[in-house]
Amino acid sequence: MRKGLFAVEANRKIARGTYEMILSGDTGAFTAPGQFADLALPGFALRRPFSVCDLQGDRMTLVYKVVGKGTERMARLGRGDVLDILTGLGNGYDLARSGQTPLLAGGGSGIPPLYLLAKRLLERGKKPKAAFGFNTAAEVFYEDEFRALGVPVVTATADGTHGEKGLVTDAIKRCGGFDSVFCCGPEPMLRAVYDAADVPGQFSFEARMGCGFGACMGCSVKTKNGYKRICRDGPVLERGEILWRTQG
Amino acid sequence: MADTRVTLSGLALDNPVIAASGTFGYGAEFARWYDLNVLGGISIKGTTAEERFGNPLPRVAECTGGMLNAVGLQNPGVKAVCERELPALAKVFRKPVLANISGFSVEEYVRCAEALDAQPNVGILEINVSCPNVRGGGMSFGTDPRAAAAVTRAVKKAAKKPVYVKLSPNVTDIAAIAKACEQAGADGISLINTVLAMRISLKTRRPVLANKTGGLSGPAVFPIAVRMVYEVYEAVKIPIIGMGGVSCAEDVIEMMLAGASAVQVGAANLRDPFACREIVKALPGTMEKYGIGSLRDVIGGAH
Image (cartoon, rainbow over all chains, first blue to last red; front, side, top):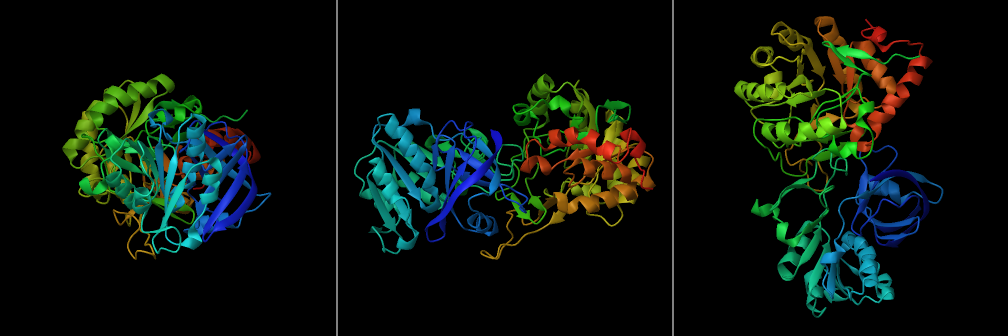
């Protein structure tokens, strides 16, 4: 974990309700894709955690969905604004546990961290493929960015306005074979992918966090390996350790 | 040269800044980022006799100027705290700590107090009779002067080290409860715990927190805490540790003017993991600005 000031370089809308923010600062604390940054916004008591979408030198890309007052405030930021950010938080995805043909399964605002993950997997000679789920065509983003990396993408929309009609699990059916899965999205989507893809998997969980660095116990969950803090011991949990909340 | 030293029941502190229970874990996370020995003290995460997972998620919510939490006393139990957490903390923090204790019965408070009293790096037992997020324990002891006195008396009998009672602000007359604790033998009073609060989601039309209610902390509660420290200072002779929304060196001095001998910093740690260190660093300059030579001289100065 490191605390630093980041300058907003760009902040643009890339789909309905979804923005891409590029920041520059000290990104040296990040060690794995799937880790997150925790943004302090003026006037808000708690920080906002976002999984990192891309890192290039001192530039960090975050893709976020406007869901409340904090993200509404973020959407109004622009070049010249400076933010206090904690970086290098969370465990991130473990690349060493990827198979040769991993599936990247993402739902909506869960897709961004899969982009940096795809880059890191490709660097290691893996052949990732992607299955995405969105609500509707207007909310689709980053398909082209993944394809530009050479990652095949199958997209499903709930209303059928783009790609397959259905959920991310319907997109997965059209992806062909895979030997491992990396997943990020809302919990019902993680659960659906967990049930649909019985291969080694790593699942990144969302949570309302207090601190984001393991101090407040605000985001604890039960796992087969004991209590874990999503912010510090996660956000990525291994398939074998997950206890879905309905199971206790 | 600004003198930041204070004492609590004979315990000498380099400065009055103590990391508040529940916002600092057992220090391990923070020790990776800075030398904890700059702090006056640390109050460890509230400990119960048995391990507790705490409440379902969501456990935290935000509001203007603060946050609500309903963690529900997640902790590994007193045995693990004594065998694992306190020895680990002793390696990175060479000063005595405040051991924060919660319970669901007088017997449980006593059991925890006995175990923690015997730990070499525990300097003060902080008896939490004010957790608003558990049923049948915590705050139910701290909202009735007789119950608070009963816990205080029982713990005092079992412990050799100074006993401070951490009070709830969710009462009509906090001074009466402080007085009851003093008469039952308390060596000091900590206040305030969080203020019982609620947020409701417009999307779900239900309370945001799974526990429905939670405890409000952060700058929003600071003036409430100052007022209550002021009231308790007038009612008791024992030292007071003031807390509630302290987030800068000025707040520390204001709390001490109200009557606090030392101050705890809580929610500020969660927004900025370096908050305590920054406050300690800012103290001498702030003292100088207001013509304060020794912090001990300002305690209760507003009365």
